[in-house]
Length: 241
Ligand SMILES: Nc1ncnc2c1ncn2[C@@H]1O[C@H](COP(=O)(O)OP(=O)(O)OP(=O)(O)O)[C@@H](O)[C@H]1O
Ligand SMILES: [Mg+2]
Image (cartoon, rainbow, N blue to C red; front, side, top):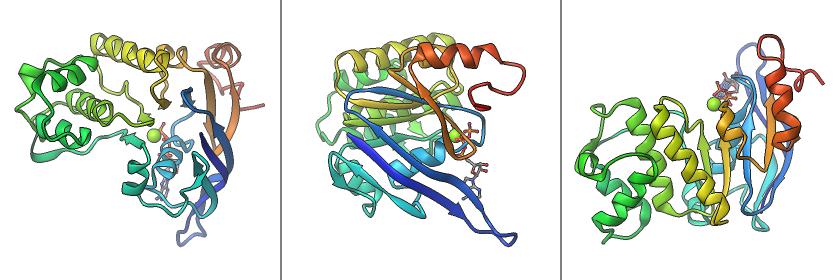
């Protein structure tokens, strides 16, 4: 179980600073699929980075499986089973897709078949990609899918995906949502998916609307989705409550 208690993140600037996350408290039980959605700049990525340890909150505490992990770094959190797929994944010049999957899995003798399985789950063919370098020669959608495959290879107990749909074609997206559905059904991991995508939102046990650095609303797909869909042109009715 993941617990955030009164998480606040402030950044300072010459004109006085800004509160990016404001007193966020949240509990996510094991094996749930939770979607964070909300307006651009609302604080979703920052919240995910706070969970992963990429951003240090100004105040508040984070507990994972009962342990206070607030002061733990990224590596220690990864060892405890938390992983995060970046909204804009980094590239690794000189490292092949196969090497990246091997490092992620922690299994030095990861077979081609196993690599193939992870790549297939994100709609890529191993034959075309295993020996490619994860450098600028890969398209945005390819690098995004390869990063998601590394999260699958890692086999984490908590996976955080930051807009996994971004830049991904419709066919690969369909394959990817099947993968999320499968992970959810087999209860092998807790998933936090940051998304603006209807299909992903509809998979969620719970939707959390993040706006203005706060949790504006939370509820089931049935409760939240119609409210979001009802107001696609003006301000979101969920947010104005
Ligand atoms: N280090 C920082 N310094 C100043 N502002 C920051 C910093 N980090 C984040 N912000 C601001 O905090 C707000 C939240 O950013 P964040 O990336 O979390 O939004 P988001 O909800 O993920 O948006 P999107 O849907 O566009 O990905 C934005 O206005 C962003 O510019
Ligand atoms: Mg973001």
